[in-house]
Image 1 (cartoon, rainbow, N blue to C red):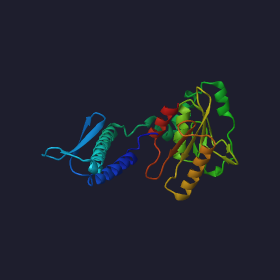
Image 2 (image 1 turned 90 degrees about the vertical axis):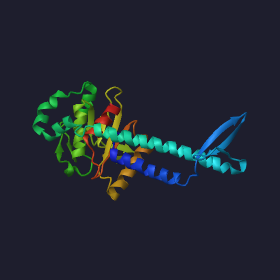
Image 3 (image 1 turned 180 degrees about the vertical axis):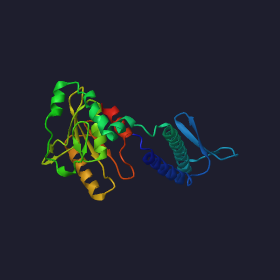
Image 4 (image 1 turned 60 degrees about the vertical axis):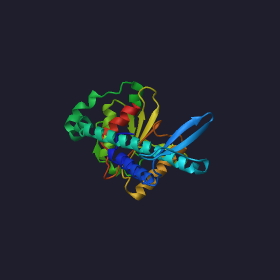
Length: 259
């Protein structure tokens, strides 16, 4: 939700367009004409260059199929219009959106200079964010990238999220433990909303093209749902694969929606 994932959305639309065209190829010829007489409707089939022909009750299925044909035609027009809109927007969408975030990520020296420029406005939230970080999450040795916040994270994507939260002056913590039923997990980020103070968790699933990782991600999402954590409400989830990596534009759009 999201930065416009043009490729995935276009693939969905193209697949639907293909299925609609296949269904339309099996539709009866002509179009349906409908007229109302009192409380009843009459139906006619209009073929090209021919007068409309009345459809009798015994041929009601023909009227139904022609109505369904028109519905499919209109749906096809809607999808083709959506496709044109996405293609047009894609041309205008700045490919380098997120340059500010990338500047901080790629220039550690500048990042160190600018840390003090993004203070958390609310003192209680700042105190919460400033408590010592938890070390109970597994694979501590894989934390290798230092962020503006001082957090040491595991991946470039986590670093981009961390830096964006920090430059947004949000109070947040990295990999705090969260107990859900009998299990304790470590969401990537726990974020205090600047107005309500409520906690929103952000979990980024970064290897969604690997079967074993997908199983763990599905289990985590199920666990969240069973304990009242709902995407677009109090839970942010983002995903990536090798072919579709997370980028700054996606992160910025998530930030715009939630904060």
